[in-house]
Image 1: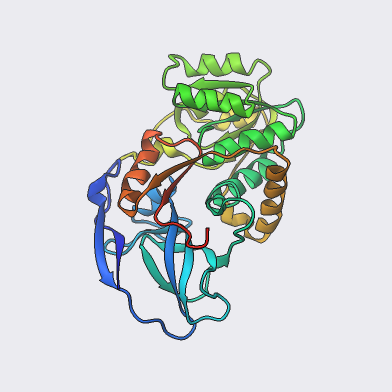
Image 2: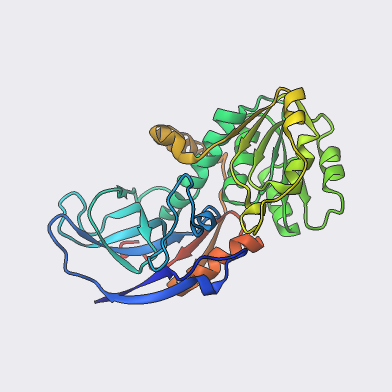
Length: 337
């Protein structure tokens, strides 16, 4: 039995393209004691993976040229030599972009299949939802009546951030890149949404949307949007620095206004974070998000592309704003669904 994998063919310069990906077919080896054969069901593609395509030290090792790309994957055990993971078990793990994978039980987390859709464990109940939960509630700590700004608000993290801020009684302003996304965020309850691609003066638009200034900023984007938000910060504002997608494909260090004087004069807290910083508290986050989902206080949008061949294009589409909510690739059906 053969399986296809997607390898990093070479490191990109600037924005990645299809040239960075290579498909390879290999025979699946027989299972050894303690191993399982996993059939990939869903693959997560995420902006942070762009950084892993570069060489250099970071918070997570880079992908190696000539090796399979890996990330969040939901898979089904279709053959097992491991009593703790019988056939039919659905698992979440950091796995290669492959149709089938032989693995032991290390790093595999069995998932329930009788509640929320299993794909949600790559979204609302997975890394994006937990990123929103801890970044907003642990760092920004919005209070009722405060103003929260979310950049990249229509993405997998941003949509959850905005809804959590509304649960906490805040006024929420988002930025997004299309009229459809603006309409969707308004449907979620955002108080104001700015289409940054069609707004000639983002600083003026943000000032008008935040007449009482900004108390919390959840930054997924960086760049000109963040520069404009810094001018609106209130005393003791809090900033959760989650992502900088506007810079990910830059070929040289971006230059811009230096924010330190603005942070100093407003006594603003600026904290960068990686969701794995909160690994010990993940059960808390999943429980809270699940509860709000059951109570109807959270909605979650998925953009699902079908087909293993489409994984590279789904990833590249992240940098063109093609997704609303969480971008996933469905590779196969769960046999027991």
